[in-house]
Image (cartoon, rainbow, N blue to C red; front, side):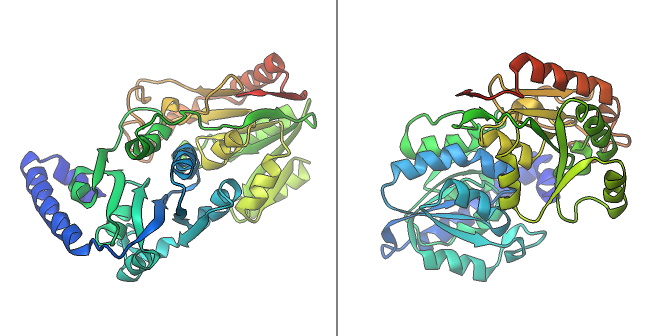
Length: 372
């Protein structure tokens, strides 16, 4: 939140807010904890978009294996299908973003009552933001494990600061390790690499915000080049692509798939040989399902999110303003950049040549099954 950015720039304001918030949340927890909570019930909170939801999978897997109890998983409705594909035997509860006020950040009283109704004895917070803090600060759980900003430290019985170094997946395994006192797997995908012989290449041209996007026109040009040797298809969700561009794709015989749901996206991903995209959730979903990936990065640092293993490649145009130590470039991850130059300077031929070499070097258009 912008207010926290202002406060963090003033040591005095930061110290005052930390003291006041710690006192407030300590009192709330003492008044809220009840012995009547269900001793067999665990609630894992993962309120994220697609990408970060995928990065929580290893932590959630470790926690489910550790707790031989009734484990509930709380996610957004928009990502429920991802979790239900991976964790089908556990209780999945969902919330809508509209269940949170003030820019979808702060839980409403009705939403907090829902958590109280679940009545878990243990809560594990894998979200680590004001969103989850506002949801659980007055719940009845005896033990709350999690990460968050220091202002919310006293909500938790076992607290860890949010990791600021790569890889993002380690933020969530840090919390799992806090619970089970054991190292979790650092791999984004536990799946084997499965390369199907159909040689279908899927390309997803969108991302969480525009500055992370290489550009629809460039993806179309890339599709034209790759279609000379392979079956290349653009993939995007319904309503994401403008009608005039879709008409142009039809006129120029460029294949595309328009999905209506995450389940449809997953179905198509499972058919492909290679997934190409920006720094985005669908690409990390493809990596999780054991597909080779090629990522186009710009204002974000690949070290924080890139899929691991030899069957994953990425490219970016490195400039003085590119992030090398931090997760994002200093221009608000490109949002404040006037020209998005890191993406503009990355040409179609350069990307196409890298992808072609990647395919030929690892024979991605042939049938391969091996560890990622």
